[in-house]
Structure formats: C-alpha cells, structure tokens
Length: 115
Image 1 (spheres, rainbow, N blue to C red):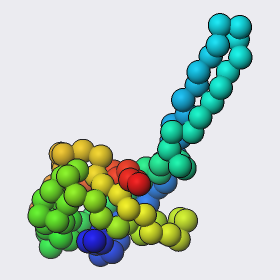
Image 2: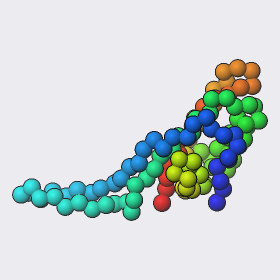
Image 3: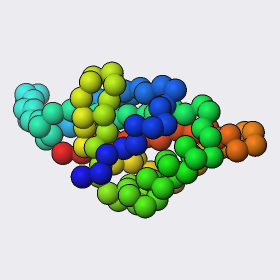
Image 4: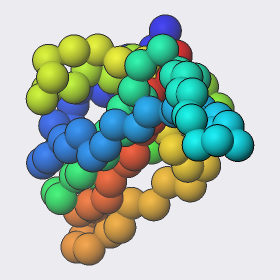
C-alpha cells in the first residue's frame, strides 16, 4: 500500500475529529436499544502547508493525482500526534494549492480513516 509523503513536512497536522456510528432503536414505550455499527471511531486528519516550493507542491500533486487518484485509492498516513499509522483516503476529489508568491504555494489536505 502506498504511503503519504513525509516530505514536505506540513506546518501543522491536526486530528480534527473522531466519528462513531451508533444505531438507536426506540420502542413505543420509550426503551432504547443501541448498537455500534462501526467497530471503532473513524478519525479525520487535516494537514496544512503554509510554504511549499514548486518541487514540494509537485510531490503532493503527483501523489494526489497519480497514486491516490483523488479519493479513489487508500494509502497509509503516519499521524505524529498519536504516533500511529492509519489507512486513509482523501475526503475530496478536488485538490487546490494556492500560489501566493512566485513558485511558493500553500494549501491543505483532508483525509479520513477507512476500515
């Protein structure tokens, strides 16, 4: 399985959220029965890049377009906060990296864990 590039280093890696899926069935007399649909919570990650060179931007661009094919293929992402690897995919089929100076870019990528 491909691995998300460790270079360039993001300015910030955030574990933005964790989502659980619970099915709740309520009877007519008010009792509830709950069942976990997923075996555990799904994590979402956002990596932010504030200053990317042309070559660094191209590395991310190539990974997104050629390796991951947008949100189609999964890959391994190492989260520095939890110090663990996760199998993830991108959350969108759109990548936008902003050129704010000559050959200097910024942008962010969002990924969601898959099981």
